[in-house]
Image (cartoon, rainbow, N blue to C red; front, side, top):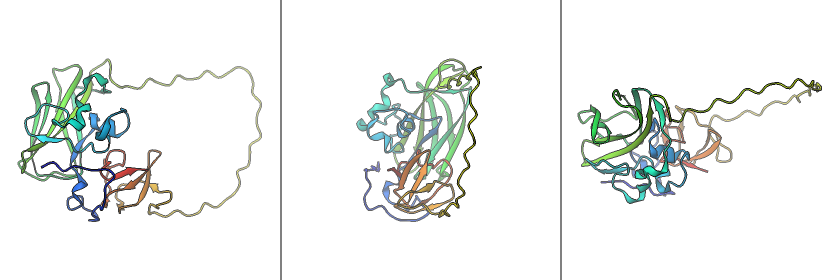
Length: 260
């Protein structure tokens, strides 16, 4: 059965340190890198995505589908190829990284290009870690490709779906243009007298995030509901109690963090 995340969340469970026993809003999982379409929406790199931007981990539907949105109309934007989704430049071997906010027992992980399955990993019903990585060979493919990544759950009839746009080999992709080097002017410029910085003693900061300003998000820190952190120049408020780990940065796990 699909667990729906409603925003804003109300009456969150405060099961500290464990997402498995937290409220049902702990949700599920998605491909964080190369960024899936739902990850790009959650990061704000693609605009006008609708509700998927708030719950990228919730694209769940019956096993055996070949759609990016798992047949869910509210996430229909994920199947819209005309949106010119950014494609990540990759080689012929790619590591796909999943972020799991609920660690469901797993049967298999599958990767498809069109109707061809290019890789499968069998977990045999085990509970995965909070982050999962798979190295997938894309040998024989080139140019822009849409890869469907599927997480098949062992104890339900459902799976989670992600579409990842990549550019295999040279051409296209999302490689940034180098910033041109500015040529210094030959005209001499006046030399300003250095301004002496005032001597002040910085006030000590608390290691704990505060409601007012927030401190930098840090892996290994235990956060409780209502804590405020900063990450990548933005402020986020904790939705669910948990202990942070790398790849659970606020920009990627909006089931755990609310932008404020």
